[in-house]
Every structure is written in C-alpha cells, then in structure tokens.
Amino acid sequence: MIPRILIAESNDDVRALLELTVQRLGYEAVRPQEHGEVDAILLEPGCDVGRSVLHRFGDAAPPVICLSIYPREEGLEPSSSVAYLMKPASTTEISDALRTVFAD
Amino acid sequence: MRSAPSSLTSRGSTLRGVVPFARRRYFVTCLAVAGVAGTWGLMMAFSWSAKLGVISLAPWVALIGFDIGILGGIAGATLATVLWLIANHADGGNLDNTQIAVRAGSLVALAVGSALAGRRLRASEQAHRGVALLQSALIDSTLDGICLTDAEGNILISNRPLRRLVAEMGMPSHGTVPERLLALADSITEPERYRTRMLEVAREPGSASTDEFEIAGTGRVFRGYTAPVPEVAGGLRGRIWTLREVTADRELDRMRDAFVATVSHELRTPLTSISGFLEMMQDEEAGLGESGRKYLEVIRRSTTRLHALVEDLLLMAQIEANRIELTLAPTDVQALASRSIESARPAATEKGVTLELITDHPPEVVADGERIAQVIDNLVSNAVKFTNEGGRVTVSIEGNGSGLRLTVADTGIGIPSDEHGQIFSRFFRATTATQQAIPGTGLGLAISRALIEQHGGTITLTSREGVGTDVIVSLAATP
Image 1 (tube, rainbow over the protein chains, first blue to last red):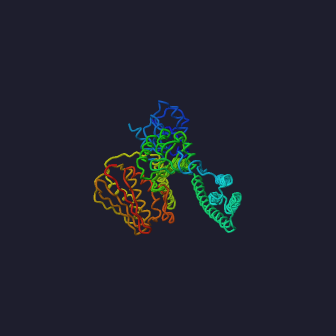
Image 2: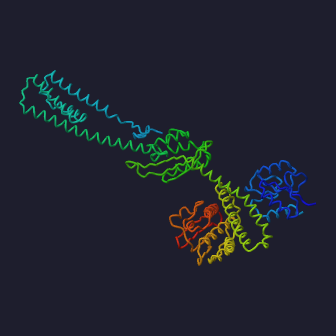
C-alpha cells in the first residue's frame, strides 16, 4: 500500500512543492477536497484549509507534520502532531519527517 | 496638589497673595487724605496749628506722593500748606513769607522724594510679577507634568499639565509625591513591580530614576522621571518630578513590532517555495549551461541571505516580546568559536582576510550553546564583512576569574566614535557600512547584546574609524 499524504497548505506554490516532495519519496499526495483514507497530513497550522482538515478528522486524525510560518506555540499545534517544522524548512527536512512517520 | 507658599502654585498663572495694585493705591491715598483732614480738624477745633505745626501733615503728604506720584505729591503738599495757613490764620499766628516758603518747600521736597521712591518700588514689583508670569507660562505651556518638591516630597510648585494628568490618573490630591504614587499601585498593570520601584524611589532620594508604567484597562502609558535638586532656595534641598504620557510612542513600538513580525512570517511562505524548488533544481543543474548555473548560484546566495534576514527578524521580535528561553548546559565556548571561524573561513579566504583563534583554554561556562554560537557567528561574520583585503580578524578567548572573555578584533573599516552609543540599537547601521553599501540589517549586534545580556553577561565595543573594531563579550561561569 502506498502511503497517502494529505497536503493542507494555503499557498499554491508551496503546495506544488510539497506534492513534488511527497511524490519523490514514492508516496501519494492527496488534496484536501479528495476523499478516502490518509496516512499522514502535511499541515499549515493557523490557515483556513488546515483548520477545516483538522475539523474533518477530529480525534481520528492521522499523524500530522506541521509546516508553519509561526514559531511553535500552544494552541497552534494539533494533538496528533508528530513534527513541527518552521518555514522555510528544506525539502530534506520535510522528507526526513515523513520518513520518520513511516519508519516502522 | 497641596497649596504652597509660592504664589505660582495655586491655579496656573493666577497669582494669589498679591493684592491688585490699583486697589491698594486707591486705599492708601484715601487714608492719606483722611489723615490730612483729621489733622487739620484738630488744628481748627483746638487751635493746635502752632502746637502741631506743618510737620504733622508731612507723613500724609509723603504717603500721597509715594502712592500717586510727583504731581499728586505736589498737589498734596500745596493742599497741606494752604490748610495749615488757614488754621494758623484762624489761630491768629503771624508768619512771614520766608517761613511759609521754607515750610511749603520742605513739604514739596518730601512729596517728590516719596514719589520717586514709590515709583522705583512699583517698577521692581512689576518686574518680579512679570518674571513670575513668564515662569508660570513657561512651565504651564509644556506637555510634561512638572513639580518641585522639598526633600520629603511635599509639593512646592507644580504646573498645569501635571495637575491635569494627576486628575486623569486618579491620583490622590494630598500627601507627598511618593505617597501619592504608591496610592496608584493597584491601578497599574504590574502593581507589584511598580510598588517595588516606587518604594525604591522613595528610599533613595539622592539618585535620579526613570520609570514607565501603564494604567490598567486604559492602555495609557506614562514615563516618570525624578532627580534630586541640590539647592532649591535658601539651602533647601528638593526633588524635581516630571510625568509624560508616552502612550503614542508605545503604540508606535507595538505597531512596528507587529509589522516586523508580520513581514517575517509572510516572507516565510514564498521563501519556502523558492528554496524548495532550488533544491529540486539541483538534479537538473548539470543540464544547464555555464551562465544558467551562475544565475542559479546567485539565486541560491540571495535566498540564503533572505532566510538569514527572516530568522533575525523573528528572533528580534521574540527578544522584544521576552519569549526567548535559554537552554542552559556546560558549554565549551572555545569549540563554538573554532566552529564559527571554520564556517567564516571560505568568505575570509575569498576576501584575503586572515582569520585566527587565540585561546588560553578557559573552562566551560553554563550557557545556551546554540545562542552563544549565534552571537559568535554574528561577530565573526561581521568582522570579516567589514575588513578589507589584507586585513586580519582575531578571535581571542581568555579565562576571566571563573568566567571568560571573548574578543573579536578586526582591522576593518571601524565605526565613527559618535555612533558607538547607537551601534547596539536594532536596525542601526554605521555610516561607514552604509556609505560603502555593505549589506546588512542592523540587527546582528542588537540580537547579540540581547542574548548576552540574557546570559547575565556584557558586550562592549571599541572602534576607530579606519583602524578597526574590537567587540568584547564577558560571560560569567553561570548566568
């Protein structure tokens, strides 16, 4: 099964970059409006699309990797967060965080 | 404000305790005329013209002259002489013309003398009143609240803006200034800190101090200043207190900080796609021509600079908001310095600048290694940046008691001496740097100072334009 990564990012260019990064790792990039199971979320905390995705999954959210423009602070990071990266994180850092999620 | 002996203190420029001049003049002249009439009455009623003599009218004549002036005085003297002559005639006295002339002349001379004395006194009184009015206009026309107290803090004189501010702040209208300030503590945003400071101010009358405080719930911020005044008047020692509203200044600071934070945050998103796609380009770089690769290198370099700027802006915003927490651990500063030097070496070599480390192997200190490394990186890269070809940058570390002293010395362009005071202020850049268009944000030294001070250390600078700059960091064994 190819891991499916939902990308909840408000900026189109960054979303394109993240999709590319995810695909290069051999995973499948999923857009917020698509349905179906997802195995991890790449999330921009604090933006509308990020909020609606978190709302949709509620307590059943898969592991979340945050990619934020804000420093880590309480209330911004969802409970299922496994990594908090600050923009501009390199694609290497993002890839490493994703690999860690699927390491087991 | 407590009313005070000086006439200036009561109501702005209104002078209390000074009877209006015209009214007093009228009163004194009436008294003198009544005196003349009374004396003359005695002469006529009891035939006392010879007994009392013209001399008994002299004080009244002098008063009239003093009060009305020369012409009034002469008129008074003439009137007195005529009245006395009438009384004398009624009493059957015989006087020759010389006697009359001598007596009349004496009265006139007395009147003129008194008139001159009166005029002089009035002129000096008017001058004093003028100065007092000017002084009160001066202190009432400023924006700052000002008052002068005695050594105990009792108000001797205050200006109108102070009375207005005090009323607006809800400060009590009685008591010494320290008492009134303390009474305000519960309405200040940080009451405990404020109370402690005000008690310190009250305890140390010999020192000057400046404090800022915000009235809770109003957003109004005030800056108070107080200093001893060695000699107020007649050997009295006192204090000056000033109060200024700085709400607008603080609001501007807040807006600037918010703006800086927004810019720093909003730059992160485009920077993510620029640097991310640059990484993606790496695989395809081989397929580019020589100029293509050169262009890519320029983009990469600029992106790195932009990234550093964004990080500095964020760090500065966090420092301003007191949101930097140190992770303390035993730290080998020498190792951090040699790492900094190695990462600055390529740039130094490219510029032809010699880079060296001199150390007497000081012991480890308890510090946040990441933050100290940031400071050293900053100082070393600054030194390299501002040193021209053939120059030298020396980093020396020496044990200093139980702490250490790190010096980054360069033979660079230096900083003009009149800018040394501002060089650690955020966004400040030395003219030597801006004139030569050396890139920078003016944040490096401000950040370095904040981080070192958070460690309880000090950072100082000595510099001579065209000779070089030494930045000296002192750190204690533990913060």
